[in-house]
Length: 203
Image 1 (cartoon, rainbow, N blue to C red):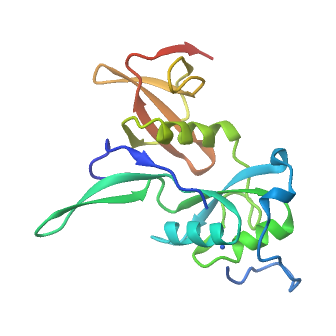
Image 2 (spheres, rainbow, N blue to C red):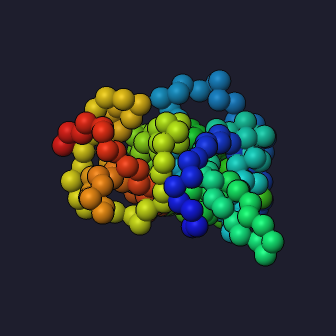
């Protein structure tokens, strides 16, 4: 993805389109976040059409649906110049936090650019909060990070102290540097950060 270590930003967001398998019942245009208990909300991954992540994110937000679209800065080379652009950290995916009800799912699915939830068709599979919070902590911490091939095995550790206190991931050594790989299992995507100077403990 070009220059990987450029820092990142977060964006929070929501969507419209025909949904197979659902009746013509009226779906609320806005799923109000203030009317539900936060403990009832779960994170889900939404698969989008290519290069539709930002559009989906914006429309979902306009519907009042909470979203998370992790972005990072990349340098793109044109014939005569370079330009720094913000691109999705996980291309093809937007995260949305909703109550797991038919109305909420249909409201997300009926969004231009949305293909489906990741997991069960039309419903998806909830993502553990700590995996989304781990990615958010990296972005909010203002530290260097990079997309990383998805890892399933390795020593799992927890960072202690500093801005990343409590962050969990897989510890590995790369060119003599210690790195922490944070993964979102459902979409099989990971992000790596350098943790030199941080204290870690095994889980």
